[in-house]
Image (cartoon, rainbow, N blue to C red; front, side):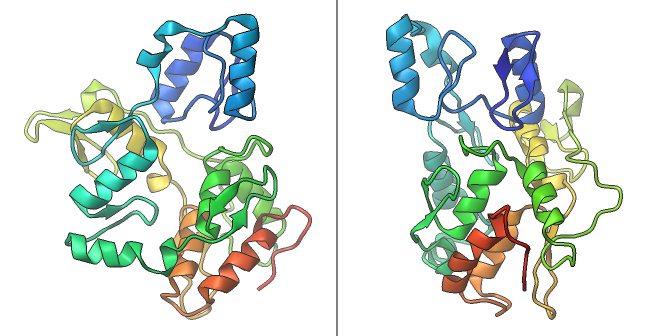
Length: 274
């Protein structure tokens, strides 16, 4: 039974059913999945040992590797880190902060700022180094932790239970999880010669890029807000809210304090405190 590595839904109908799901939502397969069967593992070493033992290597798998497409042009990359560098250097866009800049000087100053410092923050579940508090939140919300089957929805539900006073989470009375959006070839705009998002009217060169955009939190509910009484800015993801605090833009909390407090935010045994 194949599994989605982002929402952890299982597909009894097989890999084709899962592929349709991933194409529609922008979700991904588990990071360390066997080339030829539905098993997945916690590390690259473990999956390689499995494929060596059972001769499960697929010579054609190289052609099915995940390709990271730039939302701003037609360039494609084999690695997410390379894509982020490209978007910063060529398009002056910070992926982590979802923020555009006017020129290279502006974004390079931003990337050297407090919001992008590297610290020793670890995931409390898999113990992997995540760089910063924002990196830890991204790690959990994107379903990348092999020891904690979380995603944006599950993490919000867990935090909401431990935040009855709404210190950082918004109380959404009608919220029942992410709304799934998917575009078809009908999204093609003949006049603009591009695929158009029907929610924000942003244009994309490829249908896959549009669906990747629709599968992101961009058009989802704002689940969190800044705890600062004089700020209260709202965010669709925990990572964006923490990144806001790390930037010290509203002065509510210092960068180093955010790195220490993030462990209490994601710890299922603790209540959220101001």
